[in-house]
Length: 397
Image (cartoon, rainbow, N blue to C red):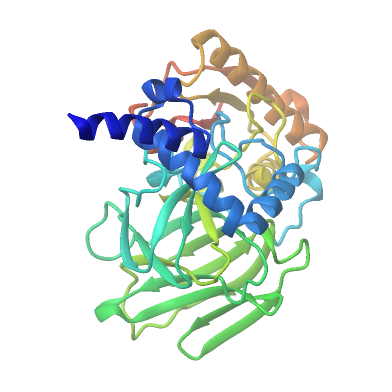
């Protein structure tokens, strides 16, 4: 009995010390509330440089989200004010159309290791910064692997995207490795290597400078595999293009991400998808379903990293002048049905407008419509399902 009388004042004092209101614990739960406040305290003492720089990066990158429905946070993929037509043709990344893995860490408790990942080395925890969840490496060197729902080798065609954040000193803070037979390395890319992205597969080695933005801060990484070929992009710059990876390591079976710095680098918004087939082939068959057209949250403004797929559509229409297309927008079920329906219609119209005004396709070759969340491709219960449902479709008419 006496122990309980001592414990209650101690807990109240602990709440006051870390800034947690005892009344708030009933809403958030003691564990989450305590972890969040302790995490904030620790961050201020040991990670203030990370937090301050992250705040600066957020201001420059904006709080927009990039998807066909607008609930997938964007990294350094470009501001909405940029035009699709101004994006370099060297940026040709088109995301896969069948989402196998997606994680923004919102389903994991703060301070815990995320459920969708396998720990190889080091210490990781889910952290929160300005309302966004990240996977943060707490040790000087850590490695994790995606728990992909595939047996054996990775698909022949696949894409991987994620946002990375790091502050100086970075060293070579990020390494992405494709693991082949017997834990052999099929290929690996690391960043930064001085001011560059470095890539190695057997005897093949390349190093290419990042020219569009500083090395430190937030960047969006993209990997696109087409059989034995692999391309690597940072933001909207293509920094590696290898036509044939090392064969002796065997076909890649896993993807490993290594965070290697004392400044607690982080990743978020991880998306792995199978596909996609070339747009011209799908359009020739009558219908193209794409997840590669992106918008800011709640907006119908087409983001510039939509350029690769829109250019492919424009090229096909130029080669087939008799073809006309119906453009249809689709969303997931986040938000109200009426709001989603309106947004999907406006986004379809915006896509047609960009193709006409920026890429030179006659406006009368398009009809537009939106279906909101009424024609789901997958259940909306998971992030992967919602990502599949956020899309734009082109159909011959």
